[in-house]
Amino acid sequence: MPARHPWEIPLLVVVIMLTGVAYLLVLLMLLIEAVAGPLVDDQGQEVGSVLTSPYVLLLLFAPILLWAGRGMNYATQRINGVKMSPSQFPEGYRMVQEAAARFGMRKVPDAYVILGNGQINAFASGHGFRRFVVVYSDLFEIGGAARDPDALAFIIGHEVGHIAAGHVSYWRQLGMFVAPWLPILGSSLIRAQEYTADNHGFCNRPQGAPGAMATLAAGKYLNAEVGFDEMADRAALEKGGFVWLVNAMATHPVLTWRMWALRDRTKPGPMFWRPKPPHPGAIPPPSGYPLTTKTRALPPEPV
Image 1 (tube, one colour):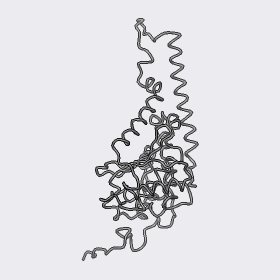
Image 2 (cartoon, rainbow, N blue to C red):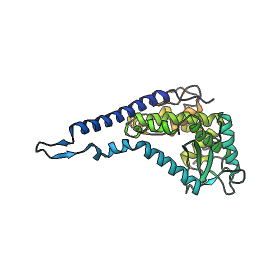
Image 3 (cartoon, helix red, strand yellow):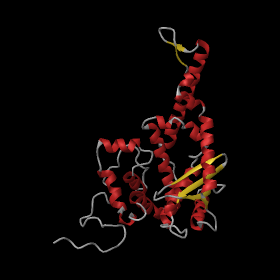
Image 4 (tube, rainbow, N blue to C red):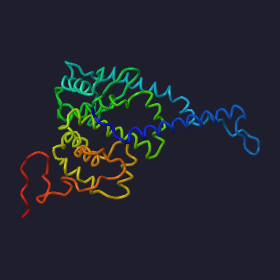
């Protein structure tokens, strides 16, 4: 089974504890107001109630808002998305079935294709006991075939991996409710989950990792121009405080670090500090990198 990133569970425990503290503070504030009454200023005028704070209301109604949001999301896919089946996007349908079987899931999640409008994306979610995967249409060719079968199998394995790892559970997401308001800590938890999902994608189709990352980097038309090793090597070479800050605030690992982690399977993906050379390929070869990951004629050298 794919490995869970070692930072995921410790960060999850901390975020859930902070979410619990936030709920306790809200309840304590409501209790104090119920006993002592609303706050007043020096002139005895009522300042306002705790219930006027949008953050307090958001926390109070978080269980209902989350449940309703998940339900609306699922309903949107059911009435607008194209459901994968043996007759509609059969290649993607088979990949979802194979990924679920590989991860030992009892029930295969539903899978939908939605209009991408040029965007390369996919996501997983759920509502109640239902789980589903959504893939943007730009990952397919005309006729429903995968544009890059290995890359698509990796991406589908990544999304099914989110479900297999429990990332889309209602109770887990409720426990992580304050994560967006926790600088660095909240985004780091989500980043660790993405590394875990990448491990699932790699387990499902390891040869699809370079194509999937190249597509995320340059799009479906120019992905062949991306040198996977060349870009992964830059994870150890790009330095600076802003590089650290961009990664720390990101909900997905930055692409160079992500590529490094998918290439070097001896250790977990880097979370806070860039990987350190030496690493096979970390120094450009004497002849320089090829222009693409595929064999093709190089342009003539300038005179």
